[in-house]
Image 1 (cartoon, one colour):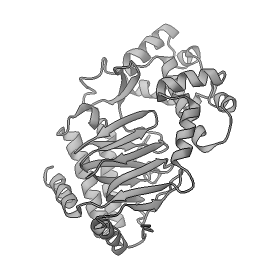
Image 2 (cartoon, rainbow, N blue to C red):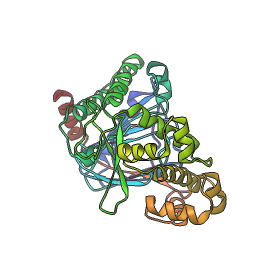
Image 3 (cartoon, helix red, strand yellow):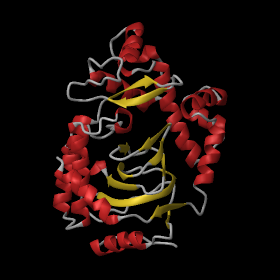
Length: 354
């Protein structure tokens, strides 16, 4: 069963929902591309929907953030080098440019909001390039004020989008959403997991405290300025000495500062930035490993392979095969039928609960 999703009217949105609701014996499929463009029907550049995801192949949104909240059941996600299992109430933020995949277990219901951040750069200083991390699935702090407020904002956007869909109101809600993200989801650190590979975790911005963090950044603006600089210059022959001179610090002091605050060494941070860039080239270009290695700053393909396997748990060649297999010419997003009324009850619970 093929479904071409209507755009432009609330009637089309309701037809889409009803088709999902009544297609009990079918999996609905929608053709997709790796570079997935969002069809915004509002000048606020916000889109929201409720769906049951059977399988969503690897893809990327270069012009939008994607925020998902699990209303029922469980889903498995891959987000660049990280993978998680999300359950009821969990939230995950796919930042613009993140390569991701979603696979749903039976009975899942997911609320999704897409938003183009570039429309709101003028309203928020330094929004451009800001990375947001939810980490709800790691902390399991489901009922914190930040998470409850974020669910409320996502539910409010869905209700407006599926109802009147006023550009002005959606724009107001989008700004409120970014306020919540900036206040509660902007700071993060890394910590070692069972395999010693560093995993990203969110810091509580109100006081910058998190029980999972070995140390809280004493100067977060400096820390993330350093991270941004590394991500902007990873393809160059960037050294700790160059960075130390830029920050007017000694190499030893800067090395201890990065490890003590971010949780990664300088070399780990640099290799992670390079591997994430390599992953995008592996997915979107036919370049060989030597070309990709040099393009992202590694000395050779062996160095790329060593660091890539550390972060992604597979070789670059294996990653490329998986991406190509997942995004073949007939790649489709597959949706399940679901109980739409149940989804609305949960949405209303989020609205009433805050």
